[in-house]
Image (cartoon, rainbow, N blue to C red; front, side, top):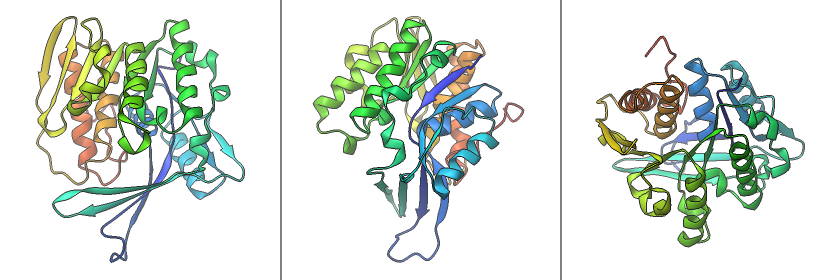
Length: 290
């Protein structure tokens, strides 16, 4: 049985300083669901990933990484004539990274409801979806909705990470409607402190709500109790991927039947591991490491 089924866009990522001046850059592949599936697989869980990549070198690298990390990539489709999306990250001293996406017309954004395997989701223990994928376009949103509907029908637990990216949404109001809908369908809700207002209807006592505050730690409200965990002090190389790692650690502990405080602890451990690496996923631990 698959422990966690997830779907989204995997894309290449080029990291550098100011591009107009730098002569060196780092190439990798990333994506919130992609990173989460790898993190879970390294911890010994059976993770399955659905997505589309182009018939290009970046697409080949995405598949190579997924298969090499033990993720079930049987549902990943290679699309002829389409390209794999690309993300450019520029580091700036004393300021947040500048992110530029090259995903218009990419294979990953062409995910459709018909690509979603209802039976495979129905046989999983948990479905994980994100607001980032829901915001990529009408087709990807409907694919996410189809997956959520399949999970609800089969009484599969649903995990949802808000992952609000303002640039993907026509308006805050539309984002609130869609993200609130998906949050209300979830059993396990992940969000940042600044995303609370986007999903107010979902912040009910019966839902397990996890708030990630990054270096300041995290908290969870479960069974009408609140638990808090401090952030871990580690050398920071790059914070990209830390949120995905936290979610994976928390889900892993939940699958293992651990208590909410123990879930927070594993989440913070994985998040700390992620920030010590230049890659979003290469520095993630195995179960032996934790």
